[in-house]
Image: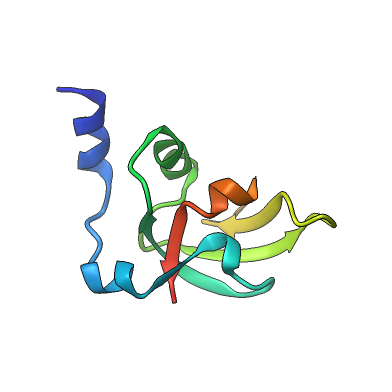
Length: 95
């Protein structure tokens, strides 16, 4: 069994209508919390974010951003995580 097959088996299946009506995590206003829907690409970065706790169905709250707008801080699963804007752009949340 390949690594990709193992990873695909751990992901939650997301409804197509949720993905179609989603926005990216970097567009989330400070202080707003949304439900994570999935990722826009299935690659190594998405797998790393998944391993950090960015799993479909989890609540994600944007806490703050750096003065120049990058990086961004989020709370997911009770843990505060800092991501670059380009990484946050890969994460889809419910609109």
